Length: 341
Image: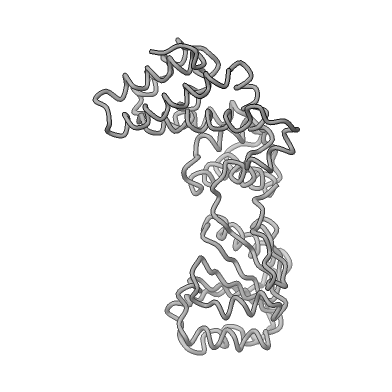
């Protein structure tokens, strides 16, 4: 499923949709700080409109440097009556002239015209947004909130491949999210590269072939080996990663993500589907964390988490030898917290 839009406020009378559910409407408000999702929504809407009528005219306006009369000119009927898509950027920086003319436009939208307003954040233009959300001009809102949770990024990858009508395994989705956990733009680019460069169904081997060298992927491989109790393999993978230029900080971050997930599901009852929504995780993440933590005691997990915090401080400048700190942490984790170094 795509990332869920924010809950509709009491003053919102128009549909609020996720980026991949965008559809034509006289006025489309694309709100929220996540530019990658906003770009996806804009592209999808343009493609839908062009599929309906290839003669679609596309125009762009910058609301921050708006010239009076620009919107009216672009929305005026053309000689041959082609449909028009008017994309307005930087509404959060809009000039007074744009605000006044956009409000006037909402009172009488032009026929065969689709006005798309991109508002990233802030209170500038609030009157315009409130008017749209109140139902003026038959608008819709596409909510592009920041994707802060792994489950949101999983939803994003799933939607990317579903939109492209391509099949991808859950393991491949997990590998992609793990490889590009800090940059949605890079994650989106990786999805598009796999879609364009491959023709078969995409699995973990495909992702490893293209992105096996990513530091984050290597970090998760080290963490997985240690959590599974494979001390020797974890050290071998660590040394290979460091020799390839990996930084200790994202290495510790990979362990933190895994151990936090284990702590969240430890002792919690319910199906993976039920817990996914409560914990902000995807069902497969719940299943994986439960499998990882099944051989651990609560005390051992606590000791490993304390060692993780100590190691995090040391690799960020608190210690003299980050590599030694990582090796000590791996030893504790591989022993499932049941022995001290």
